[in-house]
Image (cartoon, rainbow, N blue to C red):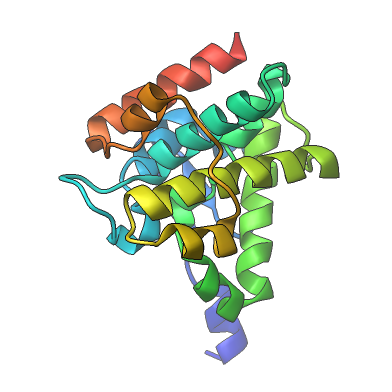
Length: 202
């Protein structure tokens, strides 16, 4: 068998607990289920697990924090775009979370897979396959705000270092910040992710 044939026959799909079989290189929206996304993201650690607390700070909890920051920054933003903010890291339910410096080392191939997955996820839940640049930038701003909070509250960064890397503190209400930045169990992260998803679809 040639190297080319070996690559072509290599398994590039993952079996989900829902029973779906998702092709990672050519994902179909029909093979994407929100229960699989919630379950996976609740078990993927942000910051490579280098956070304080009794539990990992999961990508599921991070995405809910990003959506909360977006609500704080843009109180009247359409619920569809808040849903897009919540799903911005959804591909990580199958490809995992990599810190930004390592993503930069991997380069284009990783980004291609990530973008295909995100487009399929968007289509599955009634969002544009590719968001308008303005919305993408607003989500990135909320993501940076969430990263600032996580970095300084959970991941051991100084405020000066976090400001240089992620920008400013988004200024969430104290109670909101305390709740969203206390690492949850995987079961709670999964449950709250699904509840928020349903609320944003109404």
